[in-house]
Length: 237
Image 1 (tube, rainbow, N blue to C red):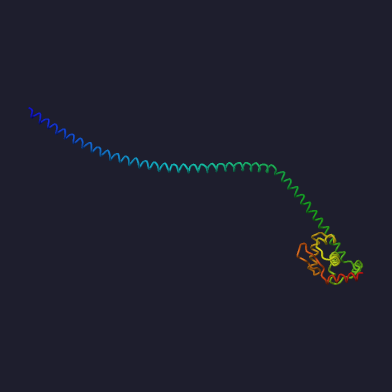
Image 2 (tube, rainbow, N blue to C red):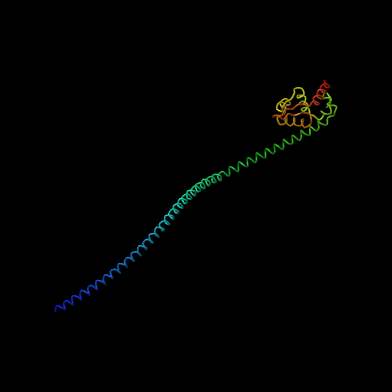
């Protein structure tokens, strides 16, 4: 009886030890599987975290672009408001201009009437000038004897083409020395423009010399013209 118990006890011990060994092996295998699973999960979590970080960076960049675009949109809206205000102001001005259209047309008609009156006045003035030209032509055909009676001396051939005003200017320069056109104009009773043209004509005709070192130009009678004028004055005396 004791031997059977001993055998049974030994058997139970062996069975228990075998079961314990198998259980330990199962636990170790389960632990290794758990470690692998944990590493896989950690890799998945890390990869997902990195992906989330990249998406967050993209989202930040998109938000920045949206903010910049929003700022541009605000600026565009402000410009549109300014354009709208300017358009409203322009519309108001156009309305005022349209309201004043009749007044403007009336003024234009009045201006046209004034222009026509000026044209008519100019036509009348031109007719008067034409009449004066006819009178001058008639005076120019007076017999030579009468003309000679008005001039106390006979001009030299070189002085014959000159008018009384041109001859007076030459005599003034010959007796008083060099002068400018502004200095001569009051003496010959001509305007500044007419005097300038007169002096230019005498210079180009060879009667005068001109000093162009300063403005206005200084005019001097040429020596031969001066002698001719003195000779003419002597003959007239």
